[in-house]
Image 1 (spheres, rainbow, N blue to C red):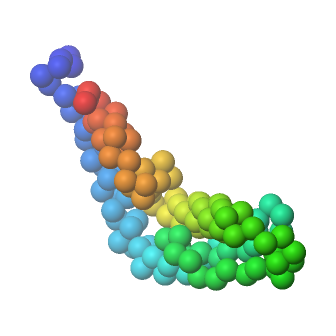
Image 2 (cartoon, one colour):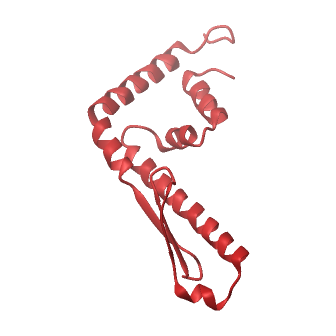
Image 3 (tube, rainbow, N blue to C red):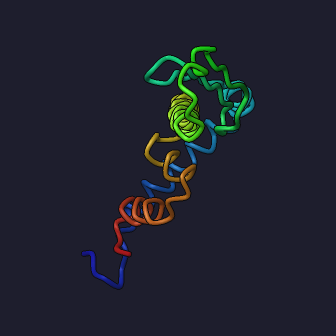
Length: 134
């Protein structure tokens, strides 16, 4: 019988088994997955089609392409905002691709929570898996 003082041992064992399997798959596939993830690049184009931004796997800026038509409407603030928004979308796309690459060994919601530094989500998932409360 489960009580607040006694955690769900079966739940904890199941979670430990899941973690062991996940780590085993990471050991087996990790180098290849890391290489694939590191090679990810994502390109997004602004809604007006005048700005294209390419980022790497971590959202790092790789390239910006500006259509010469941007000079027809000299608006530095608007151009800067367009570049920033396009770069954010490209970074989100890159993160989705990296998450997909690791999905075979790490549940996407766990991976995303770790990448985003969402400690609350990570701890909540851990508590749920262990059958306890936070």
